[in-house]
Amino acid sequence: MEAPSPLTFKPELEEEIKDIKEYNLDSNSKSFSVKIGKLNNSQKIVFMIQEINSLQNYNYRSDFSLENLKNLSKLFRIFDSIEEAFNEINNIINNKKIIINEESNEINLFLTLSNLSSKTETICIKIKKKNLSNDKINEVIFKELKEIKNSLKEEKIKNENLKRTVDELIKENNQLKEKVKQIFDWKETQQRKNINNNDSINNNNKYNIDSKIINKTEEIELLANRLTSKGFLKNKKVIFNLLYRASRDGDSPNNYHKKCDNKINTLCIIQTIKGCKFGGYTEAMIKSNNSDDDKDPNAFVFSLNKMKIYENMKKENNAVCHSPGWGPIFRADAFAVYDKDFFSYNYHVVGNKSQSNFGVMNEDYEINNGDQYFSIRELEVFQIIIE
Image (cartoon, rainbow, N blue to C red):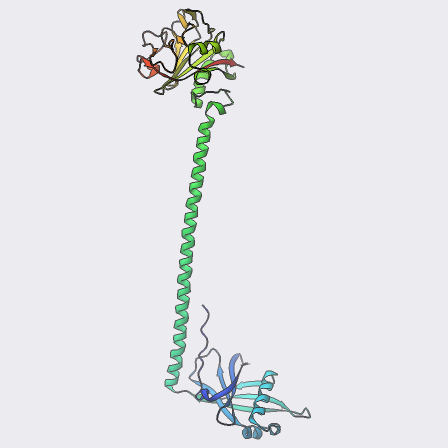
């Protein structure tokens, strides 16, 4: 806040003074306001002086007629009117040919005048101290206090406006922080989704598999770890080469055999309408010979929902069965895809725990979540290549 202006005592009769000129003059580390004007109704020059930045109950004032000035110095005798003398005094002050000196009851103004022959003379104009009445002092103090109060009120309003602006900025900043947090949260969510998507088969370069059924890394790793479980296959790369997809190649047994016959090392994966995912692996060749069964000690069945491998427990028995009118069959009825269009038939079957050659199953129809029959949503067959 700017400091309030000093108290300015209005001299009596100032309302009758015209052409007032004001100057600031310094003397002994003090500053004075010097006003010079002319009385309206008489031929007099008025000198009014007051100390700046000081609260006082008096000011200084003296009035001079042209005759008074001529008595002070003969150099004023060249002037015929108070107007000429007034202008000359202002010229002297403007040219800084003045010295101000404060005494106990008066202030002396020392003016340096020059005549036509450039002769100079310094004259002293004494400005008398003039006391103000208590009423006048109270009036001035009240006026100045009112100005200070108004100034403080304006400053308070400014501060309130500033506080309001700061509060608004803080609110906007908090809103911006919240938006930034939402953006980062969204990006983090997208990154997690991308990570999950990267777990999908299409993005998993490690295993190079294209599947609409398998969509989690742990599902692939369950199968890949089992396929490379033999000592000489450890740390080998597993390639899942898609041979057949029912939704792409047609869901009939005939289409299945066209794509898969004479292929070895095949992995069958089934997804049911209810969301169960299971299948089996065999090294035996897929054929269309009627009821041509094959033994395969390395065959296994699996459940991706339970993340469980069921090994061939009866290696001396047939592991898989082949028929031109059927889909994949793992013995003894671990699961069988019947001789119907795969998607429209609702009674494809899984065996109970006592029937299946593959174990250990803790409950009947375990790979199909306890149901004996299933309907197919998707069926895929891959040829497994290990490099």
